[in-house]
Image 1 (cartoon, rainbow, N blue to C red):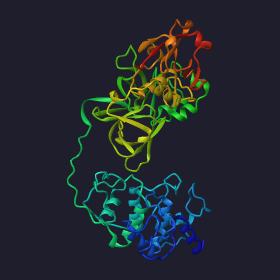
Image 2 (cartoon, rainbow, N blue to C red; image 1 turned 30 degrees about the horizontal axis):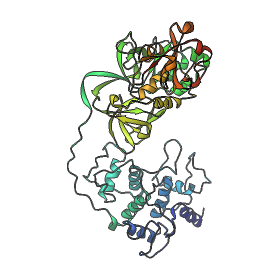
Image 3 (cartoon, rainbow, N blue to C red; image 1 turned 180 degrees about the vertical axis):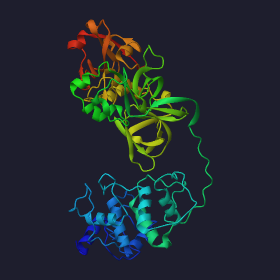
Image 4 (cartoon, rainbow, N blue to C red; image 1 turned 90 degrees about the vertical axis):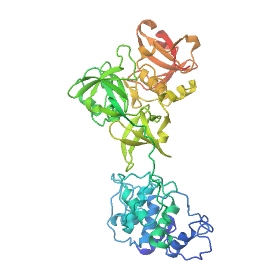
Length: 524
């Protein structure tokens, strides 16, 4: 590809061809006097790194993408984009107009892919990633004693951020934060390039921050150890060592519940009846009842049964349980509201694991985007605020309306039934109602026949949305075997059996009319 074609490509990205303009004139519609960084933009235009066009916006407050940053870097470094080794990325083909630019930046070892064979050209660049890229690109070095309260020395970008500070490329924010995981704006990237190339623009360092007084931690030493589930979901089996080959994905660590469920035939799913009793989700507190070599019998503390004071009992792989020696009862909590939500590492924001709806974790702190949540055995991880809601404690969760309960349950329509399921990978009839109520701060018994003994009895003629409706053998006079959620207009939402999905049906039809045994209300 010849030089002229490369210049056209660069112009297409961020208007990147040489252009000389009078400094008094606007550079872009959004970069004109008295814009505070206009001098830096004038300099970049004069150096041929940017192209002035007073008729268009530069997009000073827009977040810069990786490919936009690549275009500016290539111009600033005056890199030749011809005859570069061709990288192999699944999301960038050889005939892509941006391919020569990406090939150049990768060949220079300034930017690389994501480790999964992708370059992600249109992914946004964080301030932490920017620091690493600029230090590599311009071979910067230096030391400083300045620290930011939101940049841990263990973070991957710590060294690069310190180097930028030492070179006065940035001074951070007035509150002594760097905001490493905030996306970088296009104007800030341009300004940092100008400061690197022309020391006259470099930032005046802030006076040393006063020694910060660390906030009181909600974490406390615990006099007694507790035990918590350390996988996204663990099946609680009636007996240990009675599993099948097909169950391996649910027994490993980490578990792969999607692979397990999708890998079973209908008959293999039906086999689970009376083999598994319930599930416990990540972070759920349990008691140890019996310890074997590879299995432990636990009791899920928040799942009520009348015959075990510690909670619902069952056997799980020993590797699925972690011992916790800290007390987080003074911490706030985050309740996962997404059906499935990723947890991310704090240092590189790579996905650590996936967790389910109704998972509850202690919140150590939060920022604009993340809850910093405590895991049972792997320290603090990041949970997107969009995937959860936080509260001071479980008792402070606002109690729901009838519509809240019904609409929440409807989110799981068409989710396949799973015997003993209490997670968003698959619910059984009582599991979906247990999980939905749990997310609204109401703990009800786990199983249908115990749910039918608590709450307030309700006559059929007085049913209201959110009530639990029960069905029993012997025409409704025997043992309760099924539960549904009444949603109004004579209909219920329920998870019928292993060959079906969560659905809505008429309450007064077929077997449900015949075997109706009563209703209970848990809303007040």
